[in-house]
Image (tube, rainbow, N blue to C red; front, side, top):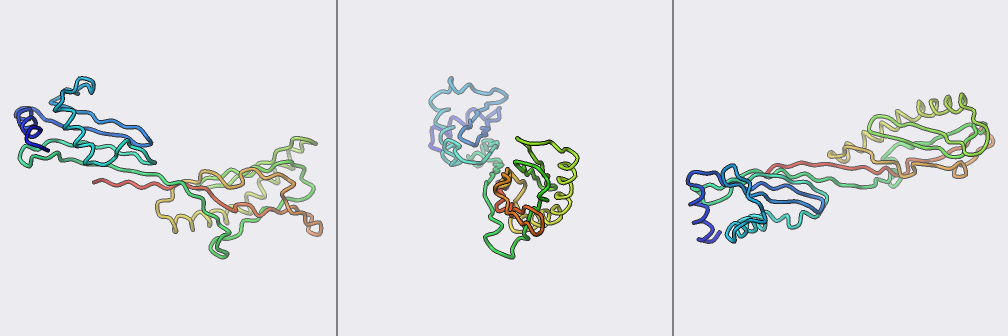
Length: 220
C-alpha cells in the first residue's frame, strides 16, 4: 500500500471497520468493499477505493478466478499493522480417471457374467460410493421382467463386495476421493460381451476405468 492508500484507510477506519469480502471460482468471482455497514457499489468506487481493492486482489493472486476451485474470505483493515488481515477459505475439486486394469493385482477383477438365456440389448451400470446397480434394457424382443429382475439382483449380489473393495482401495490411494462420477463403460451392448457356450454365459470385464472426483479444503 502506498502512503495515499494508507492515509485514506487510516482516516476512514477511525470510527468504522473497513473490510473486503471476496468469493469466486470456476471463472467468476467478485470483491466487495465495506466501510462500516455500507457495501460500496463497485460502479461508484472512488479512484482510491478502486486502487485499494485492486491492490488486495493482486496480492491474493486469484486473477479472474479461473480454475476448478472455490474461494471465499474476509479481510479487515488493521490500523496498527497497516495491513488487511483475515481468513481465506480455499477448496478445489479434481476429476480423474483411474484405470483399474492398468496395474494387475492392484484392484480385484470385476467380471460380469450373464446367462445366455437372458434376453437383453444393453446393460446399464449405475454406481456410487456404496452400491452398484445393474439394469437390463430390451429394445427388441420379449420383455421377461421376472427373469431380468432376478438376473439383475443376482449379478449385483455377486459383484457388490468386489466393487466395494475397489472403492476402499481408491480411498486408500487417494485420501481426498469422495465420489464416483460414472463408470467408464456406463452402458454395455450385448455384442460387447464374450460368449462362452460351454458355461452358457456371456461375460464382460467391465469397470475398466472409474471416473471420480476429489475435494480438498484449506483455510489460510
